[in-house]
Length: 139
Image (spheres, one colour):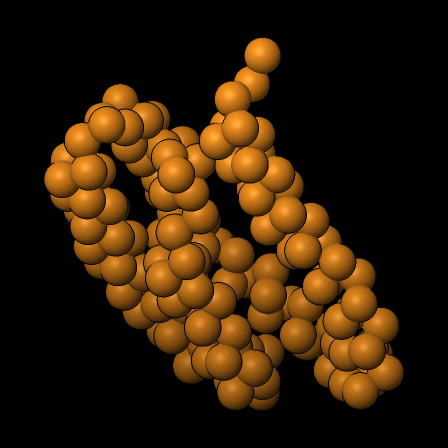
């Protein structure tokens, strides 16, 4: 019913998603012990705030770009054009969301107290641009 390529792609995507859960499951207790309850709360608050930046940066590309790439599945040049077009768009959106979050970090009193955590958390936005999970279903 399924060809081997499709089966291996499905398994690879399950593996990537499963590793996300395993890493979170293993690191959360460790971080709680290392950071204490207040530090863990600050980290999770920053992570929740940064998710808005990731949401703006992703801008639905995880759905629309997969469709676009699937439509040109047998044309590597067209797929490469889509890849770079989406990557550049996400990079531009990342800059906008980072500027907004930087502004909030230095203007909100509760964020200023933990500015270092919010600034380092912005690396998560960069990772959403540099790790193109939307491209993998094509492979």
